Image 1 (tube, one colour):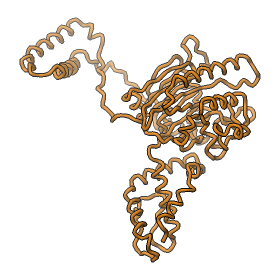
Image 2 (cartoon, helix red, strand yellow):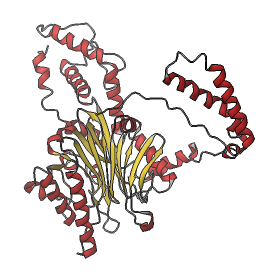
Image 3 (cartoon, one colour):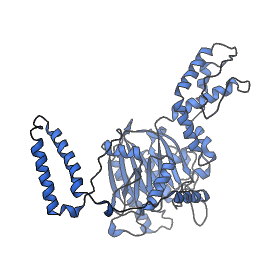
Image 4 (spheres, one colour):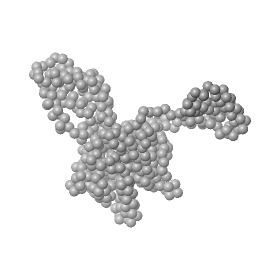
Length: 467
């Protein structure tokens, strides 16, 4: 039998990068890994039994015919006390299960995506559908092409966007947005979180989370000034000045994530001179925007997390040049150096690209953070009133008479009630009886037909697979 101390040695060579490299075989391998994680959560008691079993038998070298305390529902691998399963295999398997349990707790998935416009409502629904598919709770969107700034909600996903003013809107309006899933939306709404529209290329959102708050900054950087045009150089200067001002006005104790399309290439040659910023897994040659990005990270203490995780090139690059047909890494996720260990993995997913019609791959990061949100509350729906009936003096007079009768009948009984209780009763009465006088007739209500049917969903999935 193996000593308990020997089991701990199996944890040492395992790192987040090693585990994540297992999932590089396909774009959907992460889904199976999530299934394993959920099963591990369900079988936590079984893991405790296994630990106790090892401790009881660590001093004995004799074979034990008792079945190992693993349940049939463990999907990773099933072992029994047969001759084909050695102690070494069982220990390695249980070590991996324990590792997945230990290092997948409170994992929140963040995404970064250049969506090539989400001005149309149809495009927004397709984007949300892909975010749900990849279980992304917080996503930054670039090149949204939505004018002005504000908030819109699609299928429980809240998007906070920033764009150019309506008068200045063109086909290239730029735009950036932060899209929050249901859990992150509740954290934004219930925990006093704030957001700020900086300009048409930068928007920042602060969300309360555990152990410390997190600030997500969505950016869409100008194109690389390769031809030395003065307009492009000035646009880059203005962008980095605004980004630096945003960082200066953000609490440095927060976890700051700067995400989305930087239109920059950081090179392998920079890894030796800027080891604190760039990892060993950069794939490009440096350009001017890449030099500006590295200088910005060195000045503010950020690291480019994409370059610290080993993946296949197809899972690192996010955009293909239309002329040279070469793939490049243009989308990045930056984080403070002191919070680098919070990032568990960063990789690109090809399967989402064809589903919305963009030329950028979805970039997904796994972050060890717990969003702080209250329990889901039920909100009282608004009454849809007919405003033409509100202008009908006869109906208004009848409703007022009804209210006076109710007041006279309940005045004696409500003397002992508090003010809040009286208001609640009065509010309920108005809501209930206003339906009899001012509610919209059923025949005048719009019969809106849902456009996104199952047939359309199947077509979108086929398109994504064929991309």
